[in-house]
Length: 271
Image (cartoon, rainbow, N blue to C red):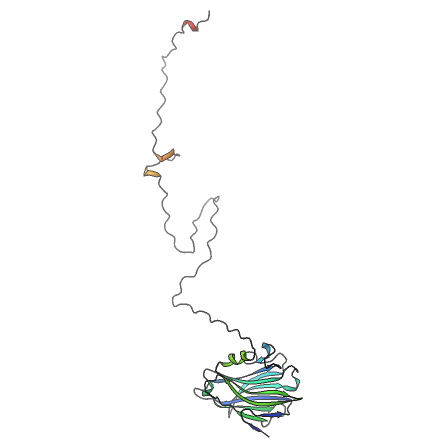
């Protein structure tokens, strides 16, 4: 027997494992819908980020809650969450079944419905709930929840929407979401990239010294050697202070071949 649910109603489940099937009618302008599940502890929050089962993490580490592939049926598209309820850790009190839309709000989604099936028996659903967006601006909706009651489990029809999408819904239950910053786009005409730092200067003891251009940019022609002060031309040899040109040294006079010493005076004659 299938229970037709209204918002807020609940029904006991006798199944050991269930499939929560989301179904909607595709069409022009209808966004895609993704099913997800959150495993909650006694405080109504996840125990860790691993308790979030969705398209990027389709299987819980325990393997007991998993997202099945989407299917296209004559009645519409489906996305399914399967849960082995009786095998779940006792610290899990609820399994929230949610839907998120991609590209538009749920106001554009037609005939959204959640159906709870006995995963082992198949056949007709145990419960059916037609999910309706209250404002039309919702981008995520809690369709229903599977929760413990005594030694068994029950299903409650919820239909609570979130305008903040799957991220807003997940963070509301304690999931840590790190949104990567978008990479900056390069400009149409990219400036030259900064090259590495210039290599160390050449060895001053090398036989040949090569001019090292900095950063790969064209270098100006080498400046002429600096001129000495006052602009006077300099000889090759080192110059004295001030850089003035020096006169050529005078040539030494040649000795006179007829030169003789004068006669010595009596003071120089020995007795």
